Amino acid sequence: MCPRDSTELVLRPDGRATVLEIGARLGAGHIGVLIQHALGLDPWRALWDIALGHPPTLTPARSGYATVRFLTTPHEGRLVAVTGLPEVTSTIPAVVVRAPVGAGVGPATSNRGRLGHVIVTGHHPHTVDDQADQILRQITVTVDQGNRT
Image 1: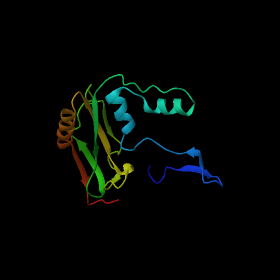
Image 2: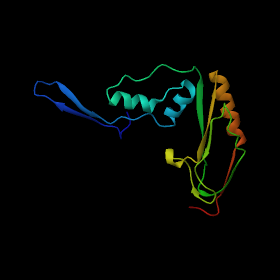
Image 3: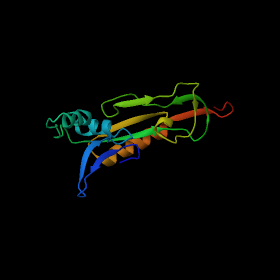
Image 4: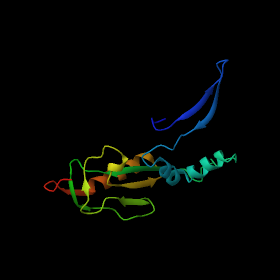
């Protein structure tokens, strides 16, 4: 669990512990979205079902693979352009640029520092990774370093 997650326990005099509350979350890096694209499962619905005492649906609707590549910049400045982005297709279900042109950007030191992402899906893990790497090589992020944030 990450440091922001928490678990509240009551420690009894006999040394036994009772769990009162768990503040867990899905993993970062779009893990839940990747699960949806690869397996056809909705992890958020499953978590709600569990929290409400209902049996969760955990049987995959399909057997596939998904990966994400993040758009970043190595230096600070103003975003000039993001070019070479692929079209959204059945195997590229998400192409997202979160930072608008003109925004101050810098190296990604957290999830919020990422400029955007591309998700790639398919039937073989090596094919999915190779395609995602190729797409990332075709994308150019242009940042004006003379106009720093």
